[in-house]
Each structure stands twice: as structure tokens, then as C-alpha cells.
Length: 338
Image (cartoon, rainbow, N blue to C red):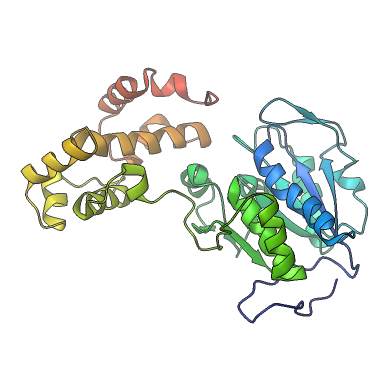
């Protein structure tokens, strides 16, 4: 397929990356052990449905693994693959890395070497969910933006501080595509179908999934604070936003109250009425949740994590962590989420 604008596109329509000269778009999905089953389905199923809706072969896709062996998904279902990464047929000019929790655990130097080799030959490398960790570890994201699942963004930034993490749901750029995982992968693929073959086919695919609102790249990954807190109170929402922006250097509750132009007592009442917990406890929980992400996703010491999340005392951090999560930080490190 060429880089000419497809029928039905507009100047604002995101253009798909180079897929080669074939009229059929070939995409390989590199499955990393414990990859997200849901993210893979959201990436691959729209392509199958697009072929059926168009009544012709517009897309071909295959599953790959590092060595050609079957790969178990996050739900423990084994997936048979067509080829090893090194033996991927040459017509597959776009390869998307699909991973899940702790993406680097089962990745070795041979995988990184092969990814670098493919990149050097002009293959377009994309990623979904936490796949950006793998491309970054292989040294393939220098000077590029990275998109990772919001839950992994703190750990990614700590591990790769020179790579810019952006909060978008997905990106479609020349030579690079990425999605944060989950339904953002579906949004990305429908937008690729739209860019390649127009709105009519993309809408037909979306409707097959009873998906009546395809989100754009710059829509937020997470629910809004209004949705998460289940409140419309603007002062409460603003207070929570301020807390989320000041996790490493926490503000006092009085400082937060002053920023939203209310009293400390009124802020206390707001949180107890709307959230069911005092603002100080809510704020501490936010910092502890970020600490838990860093514990499970980075090699930072417990003390460094405590400090980066606004706890000046390691003893207090450990006590608070055990109180909220029922386990000490050191024991929780590396434990898979339930």
C-alpha cells in the first residue's frame, strides 16, 4: 500500500504507517509471555471483521513469538504462533509488540537484538499495553514519544527517564503505532482502518462490536475524576487533581484548601460526605498506590520509593503500606496482582 491519502480521508485524518507496497496490509503480532489477551483481541479482531465487512482480503495478520514456540497469555491460555520473530515473512512490514504485566521478565538479549535488526531493515515496530518497555529496553524509542498503560507509566518513567511518556490513548505516526492497551487498542485499529480504507468501513467495523463511540488519540486513558469519585462537586474534583499532581512533595491539607479557596474544615466535610474518608487519608492512599506501582515495576529501593512518594520516613512508609495493603513493601515487591 502506498502513502497516498486514502479515499474519504481529510487533512486531519491520521495516516497509517508504511505497510509496504502490497494492497493487502500485513501485520505481525509479537506475543510476549503473559501478554494481555484482551489487548490482542482488540488489535486483531477488527482486522478480521474489516475483511468480512469489505468482502475481500484487506488485512492479513499472524502471531509471532521470540523462538516460534507457543506463548501463554495473561489468562494462561497457550497461543500457537506461525513463526519465530527472525523467520517472519518479509511482506509483514509492521510488527506490533503485545505484552502485559511485568513485560521484561521473559525478554532476553536475543529478543532485543532481533528487534533492533528488524528496525534497521525498515520494519515498523509498534506496541500496545506495556510493549513500550520492550522497545525502550531495546533502545528503539530514543527521540520518540512513548505510550504505556496508565498503571505502568510511573514505572516506565523511572526506568527510562529520557523518554517522554504521553498520556494519549494511542498514536498513529509514520513508522510507529502504539496504544495504551485494552479498548485503546480497538480505537487504534479502527482509526487505522479508517485511514487506510475510509470512514464507511471503519464505522461498519465499530458497529459489529456494538461500539458506538470510537475515541480519538488524545482522549484520556483513565476515567475522569468526576467518574472515579462519582461526584460533580467542582471543589472536591479540583482538590483531588491537586493531590495527584503533588505526590512526591505532598502539600498540607490547609494548602490544598487555600488553593481551591475554601476552609480546611469545609474540605474535610466535602471528602467525608462525598468520598467517605478524610482528605489526608485519601491523599496518603494515592501516594501508597503510586508506591505500589513502583515496587512492582522498577528496581528502585524501598527507601527511594518511599521518598519519591512523599514519605520521609521509611518506617512510617512501611507501616502505612502494611496498614492499607496488608503486606509489607518488601514482601509485596514482585508479587503478581490478583
